[in-house]
Length: 102
View 1: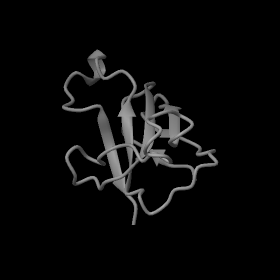
View 2: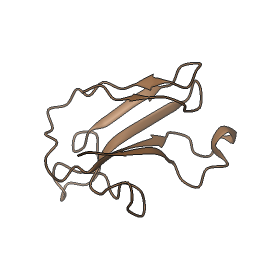
View 3: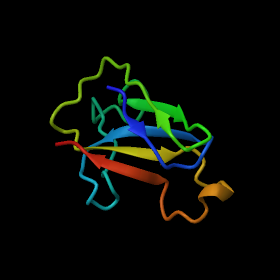
View 4: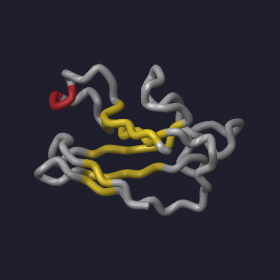
């Protein structure tokens, strides 16, 4: 799977994760979907997709993981890696776009 995003801040680092709730939840997407909920958050226990947008604010992430996306996956959420930057100080959350799985 290669999710694509458009219209984000140009030349900015983002990380996205699979989440366990829909985008209408509070917060959008709920929590990170963990392969082993008892093990805690880590790159070996959840799908991490790192990407940097181009000059037009577009980016693509390639999922290369042995983890299986089961029925607990409800959404994918893109997070700003540095929400304290001036470019993002107007944002209410580090969760930029959120997309539900159907």
